[in-house]
Length: 161
Image 1 (tube, rainbow, N blue to C red):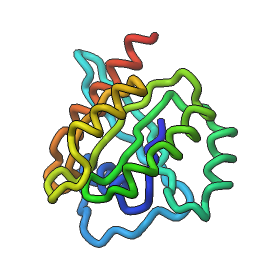
Image 2 (image 1 turned 45 degrees about the vertical axis):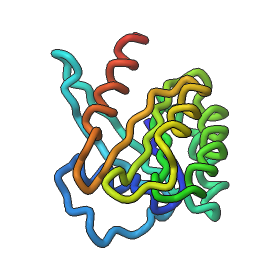
Image 3 (image 1 turned 60 degrees about the vertical axis):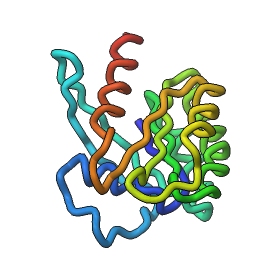
Image 4 (image 1 turned 45 degrees about the horizontal axis):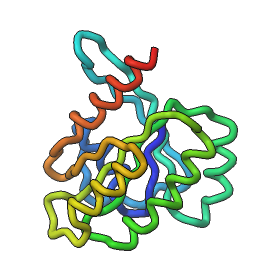
């Protein structure tokens, strides 16, 4: 699966928080990084190999190549609730994800829920509903809704089997 969005929206912080690691002093992902996480979905353990893709536009060609060479089961599009630009840019990442993984599930995450927001819940929900994406507001700092989002993704994958 992938986790994708603008730089500094908290993609790596989300993965590190779920691993119980320190999320302070993170640097932007250069290219791609791989993380493996396991969640209990119902009574089944589900392991995810999560490709943390850089949101930096200078890695655009690398991301396209990566998407072409690695079929994904779907993934997460992440924006920062404190950044209007990251929300606006989520459409760009959505188009890349649709091309690379057509028909695969995508969950939209509005991250940094613990901070003062500029993107309203209503507009994020409207975007998610328009594209038929489940939506969660998360915080890597407090771990709010992180496990729930991944378990939901696991349920979607298990239902498709």
